[in-house]
Length: 159
Image (cartoon, rainbow, N blue to C red; front, top):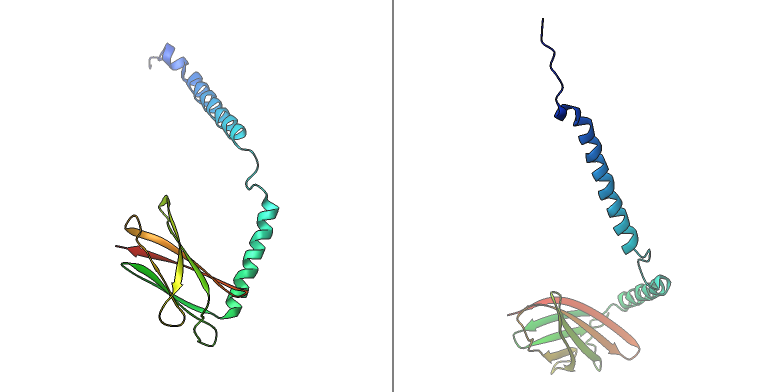
C-alpha cells in the first residue's frame, strides 16, 4: 500500500498563482488601454479635405509637367550644380528663372536656397554651391519659363 502524500501549504496556493498572474495581466492591459485612449486624439491629419484637394492639384501639375516633354539633367561638381534643360523638340530652354534648394535629408537647419544663373551655353544654368557640410544632399530645382513651371529633384553627394 502506498502512502498518501499530504498537500503542503504551497501546493494549495497553486490555483491562486494562476489567478494572481491573470489579474496582473488584466491590470497591465487596463493600463495600456488607458494610455491608448488618453493619448490618441482620433485625428490623423489636420485639415484632411484641404490637403486632399491640394494633393489633387499637385497631381494635375505633375501631369502637366510630363505633358510638356521637357528634359533636365542635373550634375554637380565640387564647387557647384549645373542644370541642362531642353524642351520636347530638344531645343534649349532659355530665359528661364531657376532656383535651387539644397537640404540635408538627415539634418534640419542647413537648407540653402540659391538662384541659378544662365551659363555660357543656351539651356545651361549654374549655381556656385559651398555646402556647410559634406555628404548627402537633396537638390530641388524650380524652373519658371513664362507660364510654364518645371520641377526636378536629385540626391547628390558633396565630398
